[in-house]
Figure 1 (cartoon, rainbow, N blue to C red):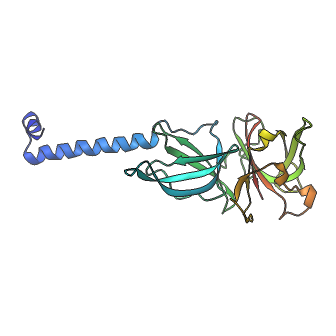
Figure 2 (figure 1 turned 30 degrees about the horizontal axis):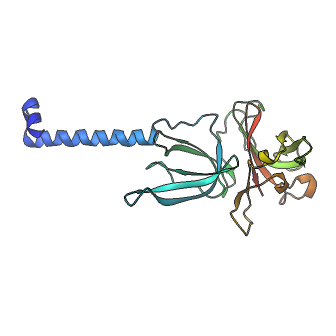
Length: 243
């Protein structure tokens, strides 16, 4: 190959070798770029995950690879996903809320953090009508995040066919939004809870609305539960409970 390049392009031995090195470098760079970004796109339909842990793990056989691994809960199910090389930014901890998308190789190619639990900070874009309580004041918006205190709660029994109702607000003694939930045993499993004081089992777990303490029930801001509500076009996608 070196001899062909020398004759075709009138190159010296060193010039031909440099051309080969440049070609290999560009090819490898393109492969890495494809691996990280190919078909990994966040959209309004991307679900939210509450993080349980992020850790390094060997995958594959004896000749496998060491990859950063995400474990969490998403819509009532445990998920495990692997970050593509160079994607993870060492910025995710237990209790955080994130969205991610996988590339054509099945690895996480892109992600964004929506809520930082340790800093108690929402990370959506604070433009237009957005503030720290809601990402969009329009209830029927294509995508809306709301994070506030539970002012009141009606927790309907599973057997009576009624909907449970939660009212939330920026302050625990204010009700600004009202959310209805289908109260059956299957629907309750989509509620994901973070309890930093839990002594047995994971501090991130699945539970029903009986984990929620409203302002009306306690009249104590420290004991009032906060909830993160994810809706699309006015319909509930997920509810995350912070105790």
